[in-house]
View (tube, rainbow, N blue to C red):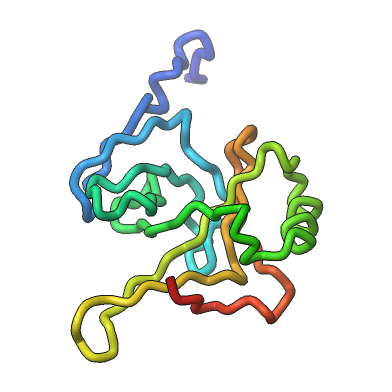
Length: 158
């Protein structure tokens, strides 16, 4: 028997999902999810992410970019400071043009890599300046865009 469209409700998609993250349980609203049509580099099958504050005051400058379909997949990210000029404006403008994002709707996230320090004491953090995540905040769509300029480090120390 075919499904009656009158009986199909919004309840087929939950309003929110609670994800058990490495930082504890965090609730994400589906309507605030960020859709990545081609996923992140190395993770092409993961398309819906949530962005949340990390519940640790020592990490205020970072956010958690959490897959909403795989609790085991998350990334620490840092919102890009446009005033830092770490990425040339012309390279940002080229990305905006190729991704069809209006400048007023742009947010950029830098994926952070955390490693043990070489001496075994503490940690080091770096980010890939060549492959930031460009988010169209109005459409809630994002792409990890590889900037075609080798002047940007793939392991920029933070």
